[in-house]
Structures are given as structure tokens and as C-alpha cells.
Amino acid sequence: MERQAAWELLREFTKNENLRRHAQAIEVCMRAYARKFGEAEEKWGVVGLIHDFDYEMYPNAPDHPLKGSEILKERGYPEDVRRAILGHADYTGVPRDTMMAKALFACDELGGFLTACALVRPDRLTSLEAKSVRKRMKDKAFARSVSREDITKGADELGVPLDEHITFCIEAMRGISDKLGLTPPAAAPAGEPKDAS
Image 1 (cartoon, one colour):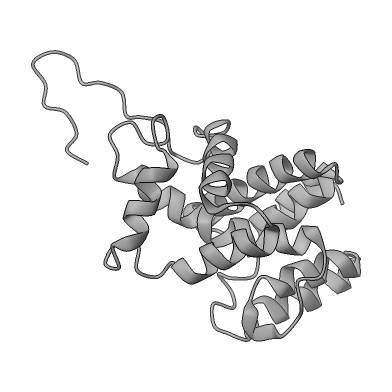
Image 2: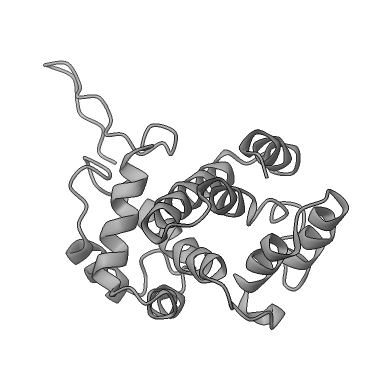
């Protein structure tokens, strides 16, 4: 359950930089929740880091995360880690019966949605607040592949009010915004046009 081994596993199976960034976003949120709940930070972080490691190879249900779980078993990852990862996909039928599993489910969709919210803001994560995120959640055309129901359900299962959960994850992700590609773009020198994105 060492981070370096988990990072190497992720790099072996995941070449897409955005998927790697998603993994790191969920890792940092999981580590923050582990600290909050007095749990094993390294273990929770590893679960967040590798939860989608097989997605690039097996993007369709139920292959993801079932095929990944088989790979993790072969590589000696413990059952509670594999169950938490299986449980982040409702269709596996694996119950989220640990705080680690509940936290992973709660952070996964939200982490992706927060990234989408940050990318359309000039200052990225710097001033992002729960209120803005909730407003974006109402816009069904925005980041349409992200399940708003799963975001709400995840916070409920974790026992954390939604706004508090959103704020908590934003703060965690701010700590590694450079690794996530979410630092504000540098201001253009005088006389040059600013990036419109």
C-alpha cells in the first residue's frame, strides 16, 4: 500500500494525462478525508489514486472496475481496497460498507465536476465556492457526463452536508492545483491579448 507502487501501476495502465490528473484529485480528497476521520491516510490515498487505473483499457461497464479488481488481486492488493474500488460503481452491486468506500464514491464524481467547474473560470480553483458549483449542477448541459445524483448521494452516504463536502474537496484540490493543471494562466504582458478560455 505504498503510494509509489500505486503511482507506477497507474502510469502502467493509464497514459491519458487527464485521467492521471483525475486520479490525483481523488487521491488528495481521500487523503484529506482520512485525516478528518482519523483513518489510514496512505491507504485511502492509494485507493483514490488507483480507483480508475483500468478505465483506459476497459472503459465499459462492467469491465471497469471488475477487470481492474482482478489485476489488483493478482498484485496483492487487500480485499478492502478492492471492495472500495468495486463499490464506486453502483452496477457492481458491491455495497459501500466502509467509510473508505463511501468516501471514494463521494469524491469520485465530485472531483471530476470540480475540475470541469475550475477549467471554465479565469482563476481556476482560486475563488471557486460551493455556491458556484451548486449553480453549475443545475445546468444539465454543463459537464453532462457527470452524475449529479451520484454527487448528492455520495455526500449523503458519507454523512456530510453537500456544501460542506464540496468546499472540503475544493480546499483539498487547491493544495495540488499545479499537478491538476488548475493553476490560473499567467497574465499576458501588456499589449498582448489574454487567453479567452
